[in-house]
Length: 137
Image (cartoon, rainbow, N blue to C red; front, side, top):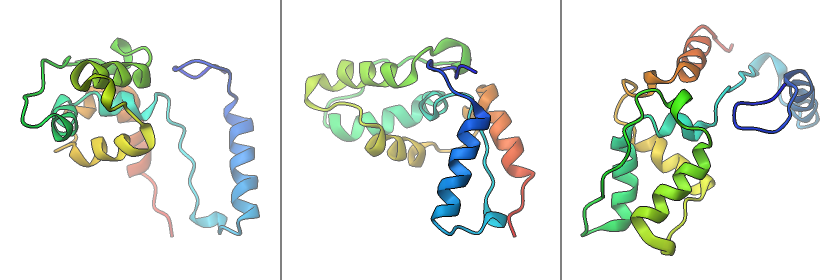
């Protein structure tokens, strides 16, 4: 199976590796739920340009953030979300500050004011529906 963002992956193999790693770490398996994310997290985060403006604006003050794209169908419109975020950061901030997923993804997620724009993403809706149906004991 090929993930939407490219490469080759097998959900079964990924699941087996994840369970093996959790088992080796003595994680109680009754407290574990694995949900496959069909699109990169950044695809969801780019669905809400309010969050993009907030995070980029932190680094750009006192200058205003330029015109950012408004992705009404992010799953279809954004082919390579991390590459697109790198481009947007460079466009707005120059080469002085690059998008770094481990730093900026959490800032973007924290800056999303509500889920209304994220619901534009079918893969986010799938994830939210499955996550809402699960109760870990």
